[in-house]
Amino acid sequence: MTKPTGRGGMTLIEILLALIVMVLGVLGILALFPPAMESAKESMEETNAAIVGESVAQGLTNAMRLSIYDTAKSQIVATLTHDLQAGTVKMKYRFSLPKIQSASDPVWMHFPSTTSPPDPDNGATLAANYDPEGDNRLFLLAGDGWVKETTDNVKKINDPTDCYNQFAFSFDIRKVYTMEYLIKPTPQPNPEKPGSNYTEKDLDPLMKLYEFRIYIFRTAQQMGAMGGGGTTTAGPGTDLRHLVGIVSKRIAAQ
Image 1: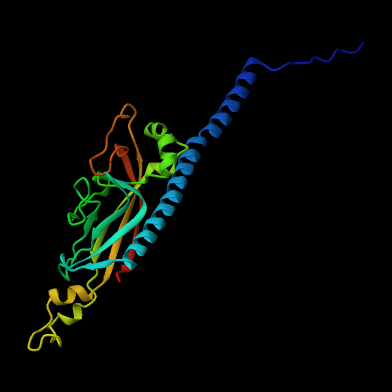
Image 2: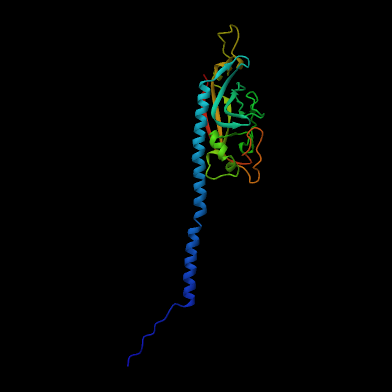
């Protein structure tokens, strides 16, 4: 007689071990989702920031090409035409270009200004420890007027599908000292003023190269703040913000 062959099944310990291996594998896959979502968000922010920064830089280039010299102020005045909103000012922002201050330490002027409506002659002089993320003075991207009216309430609760209107910008200007060689180390004679040497006041209208620093921010408004927020300069939508990128550009005035 032949002895019957025994057939054994899986034990409880084997089942538990299989479940542990499966759970560890699933948890490993799930752990990849948060970094992937964060990376996608950062990529979206950087892409939109680059688009906005290039658009503002182009707008400033056009403004500088069409700038005029205001004889009453003895300053060059430019008008930035862009999708922007600063207080009650929309689409067109007029600002005065700074004069030369010092060859060794050129002064940065920040726009938009500190008043509402913005005063083109009231740009803020930046401190050495300037923190753009702590500054409420921003140009909001207003968007198309008709679309803005229909999506305004949705925007106020931070609609994730309306990315463009969640960005804002501001910019600094300083004049580049391109004729320092006429003053340092020794002031050179000024042919237009016989017997006199060049001074910074003489050189200021001759130097027309300016350096711009454009700050691009991602903005949002806190839940429950639908009735307002922000500042009198930028308006609603600036309760939460962080700096995404900085675009530097040198542009010559006409």
